[in-house]
Image (cartoon, rainbow, N blue to C red; front, top):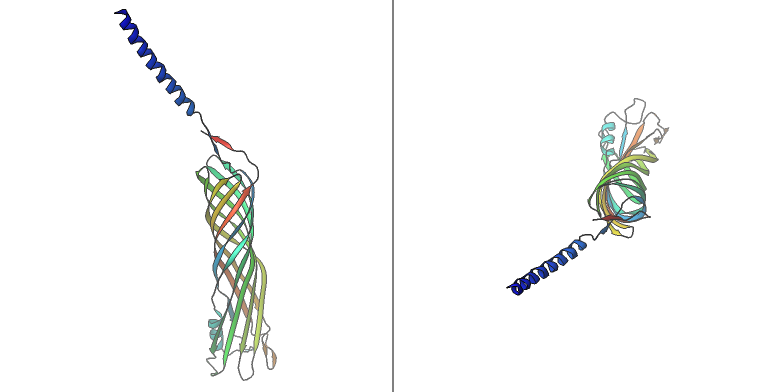
Length: 276
């Protein structure tokens, strides 16, 4: 009987030892850690994409009894001078910025300079209401070769490697506009005006950025840009009899654009944080 009890006890103790060993091994695996990405640091990068936008150039004049135009001609000139331009082009350039990560939030300041490529023109003609068949023509052209932005960024981490963010700030560009007025009246007249101005407007957008490791990240971004309206006045209408400064012209245009682009960034330094 005693031998039987000893055999049973040996079997029970052996089984308990095996189970304890399994539990110990399982507990050891739970201590493994995985590295997480830290977004804090300075970065540089490049981007490429496209822009599609519009401009509303405007040429207008006012009636003056000592001026060139008949009273009925001024509304006609102003109607033809209200024009519209669409533009689309490839964009691309360079980016630099700095991020601060606070738990799952990321705050940043970013600047970039890009080829903008905004360019377009419009033309319109009409017959003078007072003096058919004599007619006039208004031409407009608008361009902006480059675009720079300085923006804040605020985002949250959907995962340690996925950053979703909103961004906004200043948009800067040198804008150019050229305008001409001509007619084929019995004694033809012509006028021209030009604008060249560095405009500071605004931009806002959203984006996403994914850290692929070793400091590299990929991003996709949408920005809306509004550069405001530039204006110039002109008194250089020339006629067969000489200048007609009483006929004052006003020329103006705005530029608005949508930009979609993708890019790659490289972040310098910054620790890797252990995630359990």
